[in-house]
Length: 107
Image (cartoon, rainbow, N blue to C red):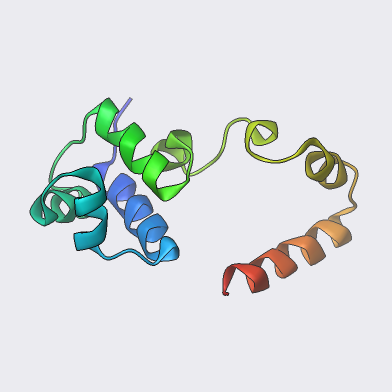
């Protein structure tokens, strides 16, 4: 399996920005250099499994999302009630839910 560190870095950058952190803040939280964060986000360096987990934890995201762009087990990250609503929704309702989530995510 080929690991695309550029894509991994982009996902980390996206999550960092969503949290409102600068590279400097994230580096400080993780006790690493800003240069290292920059290299990770630009796909210039490989990060260890330990660092992947630390980054994910600090950014409140799943390590699996950093690696694959998806959460493999949605029930592990969302309440059962939300999972049930999504599973029982029509395509039209799912589109509405998605649109609402996009609006919420902007704030």
